[in-house]
Length: 287
Image 1: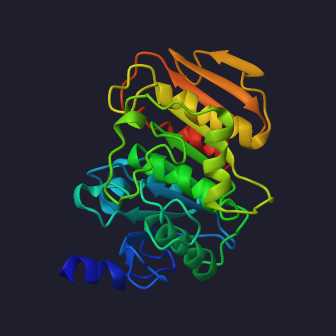
Image 2 (image 1 turned 90 degrees about the vertical axis):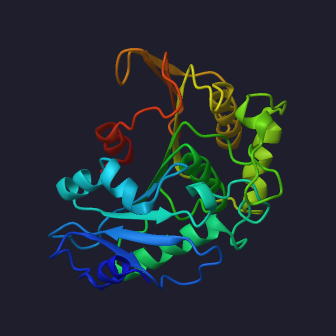
């Protein structure tokens, strides 16, 4: 273990020294993903938890430094989990059969166990666990929303894909039909990926918000429609918005509300990696 990692793992967890900590033993870790946690000073009893999942080439420490969630944690006093991919290139396994199944023994399973550990270790409120991901991290967030709906109250996806879209039956697979927007599935077929992730589940599912850019050349804009088709079907909403706001949350963005549990944000002229809107995320989560 690197000395820096050892130092991080020995830092206090009570918020007195508010720094990033690596948690080496959070329970079953089938994919050998890493877990980093940030605890703000003066953490209140029964805090909320936010899980921030990085993009390809990212790391837990990099996402801690490069995203706004550390600052927002200091302001609003919630725990932040920063998972780190164990895979070459820093991408998450969003394409194997194992990761697309609850407790299947892959990256999604490891992140779910991080959440289970943190809720218990920090005596967090299990009804206030939130999840946000970017790009590959957003793809993972879609899978976690489907396979572990009981762990999360709300999920925000930045520039990702629908659950199951990237399936190749391999850990490091790249599905060019998905990334290129050439999938030919019905809304019911998209929804089936969610149902198969946790067979028999009939409880409450997390509220969902989907961001995508209109000129994304890495993950084609059609993926916005795939995600909306998936979740409108799962929630039983019509496939068209019941409310729409232009230039919201900023100029060129259109916010579409499909129901109380699903919102889409389409960013005109924005490419891959829609910028994180941290303060807007807090509003959606209610933090």
